[in-house]
Image (cartoon, rainbow, N blue to C red):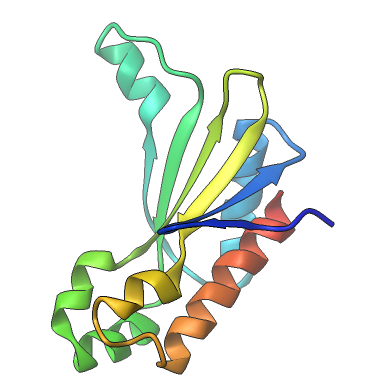
Length: 133
C-alpha cells in the first residue's frame, strides 16, 4: 500500500482515480462518516471563468463542529485552521493527488499537539484519503 508522504505542513497521497472521481469518492467517504462538507471550490472552473488555464484542482472544506469546538475552547486562535480541508489536483503528468494538513505540525503552534482530538483528526484525514484514493 502507498504511504502518505508527510512534507512539512502537508500530507500528500496519490489517487488511483481521475480527479473528478477522487473528489466524488472523498465526498462519499465523508458522507458515510456523517461529516458535513461546508464548501467545495473548483479552482479549474474559477480559472476558466477568468480566462486562465489550470489543471483540475478542487478543495473540499469539511469538519465536525463537535471536534473543532473542543480545540477552540482550549485555544480560540486555532479557529483559523478550521474547518478541515482536502485538496485534490492533477499534476502535469496526469497523476492525481490528495493533500491535507498535517495536524500535529499545525497544532504545535497552538500548544495543542498532545490533544487527542488532533490525533483523531489526523487519523480521519488519512483514512478518508486512503479509502477514497
